[in-house]
Image (cartoon, rainbow, N blue to C red):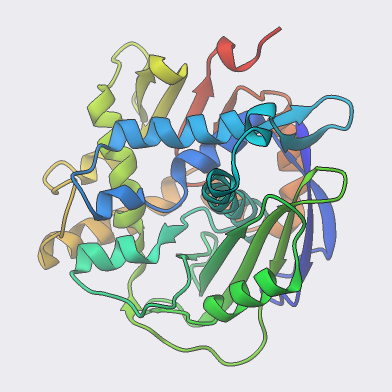
Length: 337
């Protein structure tokens, strides 16, 4: 179990500590890689949700590891061998993964979705300059969050932070919410080589791009995960009354999604645009399921429980369930003796 040091600035809702050390298990790291956004590849060529999910998990696992001497996340030897262009692509993905982890555990926002993914199912387009992700707080659903995620293979500088702040200010409004939070998230490595997080809510006015609903966000969030689960094939022995599980032997991982969420997609296309009526129905149904997820009551005390939650996950580093209801369990090959 390794620590992720974080620094925050200018957040007022929710109120965050200025700095701290967040305990992040390997399962939490890979859950973040699995669930962040919606697979960007699905917006272009024919999507392959299971393979894309496996790619995400492998990329995170191949480039970050726990340093037992410091209990910190550091780059792997494989990462050090990458050339400059390869490192840029990996750093971008690790920046997205870190944003997903910190937004859930520090801000109470487990559903972080690529803005482009939401607009794709609506048949719309955004401006060229825009935030990477949108989401909303799970506890009250009273504020929208826009996140611009950056990743660096070295130390964070003012230039990358300012770029992230500029794009985070282009905030789409979500029609069911009443206030807004922006987050410029920068993942980098400090002078000791430790993976660290920086989050800032940029001051000043924001530009509204498009009105979205929480339901649109949820459909875009869960659709690629459900598609991956169904492609892998659900396991009757592992599944129970509440959750459907699938084995993914190629990456030695088990994925679980609540049955009620999977059932919502029974009659929806798992790729491409979704007809307006179907989208509205599915979005409303998913919104109605949120109170039944285990993370809903916990999210109401997000500012108080990030330490205890990290400590609790440290006791079972091979498994993790997000506040979104998605579960991963890692096999023994992830923990070489």
